[in-house]
Image (cartoon, rainbow, N blue to C red; front, side):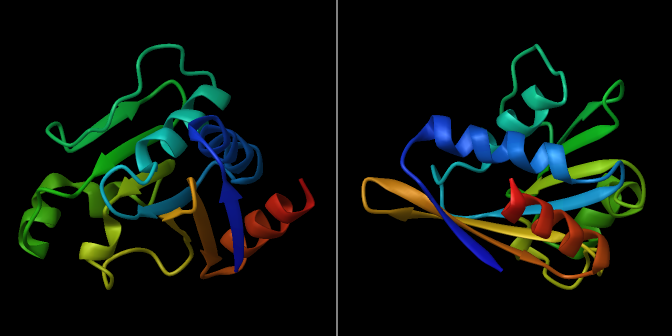
Length: 149
């Protein structure tokens, strides 16, 4: 596990870009933290680093935004209340392929793949901090790569 101080939004997006450089073509990144903590900013940095040129906004109402050319899906499960609703979205089937960035994932702690990066963003001083934990071999390799960057 590592903790990184992020003094501003640019640093949060830079962390997203750094993560994009170290994760494989199949990865699950669970993004948690209070409203305004930087979950979407981190996702934006990740997507920009992988080549997305269009707007990157939270998929709160769409639930999932897919970027097929990049092999990335960005989900927000904030409005989902039950595991049955989550199953209906297809997210749980989808996380077996491509890269997934999932905001508010801690609402359903038992459903995600065993190998994932758990990223918690929280206010810290005048900025925020990110705590990143790996739960399996692929995510651990990514975390080691992030530490070397």
